[in-house]
Structure formats: structure tokens, C-alpha cells
Length: 205
Image (cartoon, rainbow, N blue to C red; front, side, top):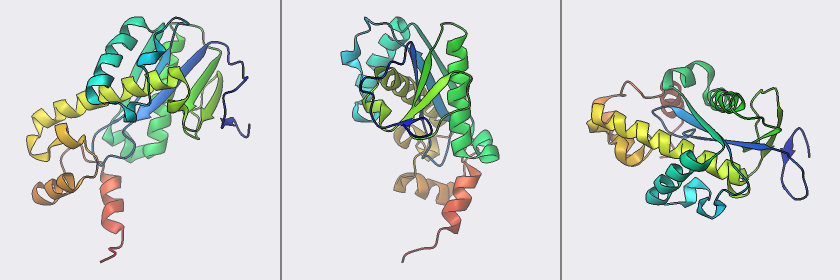
């Protein structure tokens, strides 16, 4: 262990675990969404996986079961405006912190485990775990809830601004998304700081 960062989970007693993860750090538009989850010992963990390795149908079905059977769960989103104000890393950590705090008001937590290599500022013991969404069921469940909720939000945005194709690419920097920005200009939910970074990146061609 170094600075709360674990590479392995073998033979570590975490007590009651709350897992947290986020979705939406990479897109050019929309919120970043985080979830926190506490599972019971008899939760059907076979339905869980890293959300990125699941189909949309598998994620949606698993999310229903997580919401029904988890001991406690919470989801928090931080808007594009917050991302522009405090940067994407801090917005992601804030969303995870707030999701954990909601869960901690429902059930006692001994350890918060988060995916990645950065930890939110929380009052409980907290460890960041590289590839935690492939190792810890609670983090897997959190990644599924975060991803499905953010996708739901982006589909709602697609109804409001259909020309940008948010239901398809969810705000990620696909060729289609960038082409729509160039054609129509940034939508109201584009992350201005991300767009500025894109504009300032030197061309290789």
C-alpha cells in the first residue's frame, strides 16, 4: 500500500465495504455521474462486471437488481457547469463523496473503496484501487449504476437537442459528435473547458 492505493485485494479485511465509481470523465458534454453501493453477503455477484465490458441490456438488467437488492445505494451527478468550474477530476471526486455520504446515512460503512488512483475526501477509511471495477463487487455495482444513470441523462438530453446525437455517443468525442459541434456550435451542455483544450491541441496534420 502507498498513499491508500492498493494493487491487490488479497487478505485485506475491509469490514463493511461501500464501493464507488464514476462514469463520464471523458465526454465533451454532459455530467459526470458517480454511484456508491453496499451489497449484502448473499447478493448475486455473478450478474456483476466492469460496466464497460457489459452490453447496454446487461447493464440495464443488472442495475434493476442492484437497486432492488443492495443494502444501500446512491447516485450523484455533477453538471457540465460544475466540471468547468472545478475541473473534471474534482467534480468526479465530489460526486463520489456525495454518493458515499448519502449511503453512510443509511448504513454503517467501515471502508470506502473507489476505482482508480485518486480518493475523495471522506471521513471514513478510503482506498483507491486500480482496476477496482474488475475486482470488487461493490465497485462493479457502483460502476453499473453510474453508467446506466448517466446514459439515461444523455438520452433525455438527446430529446432536447436531437441534432447532436447524444443518445448514440453519450457526449463522448466521436467523429459524429465533433462534426455536429462544428455544424451547429456547442450545445448548452458542452463542457467549455474540454472544448477549449480541444481547440488548443496542435494538429498533427
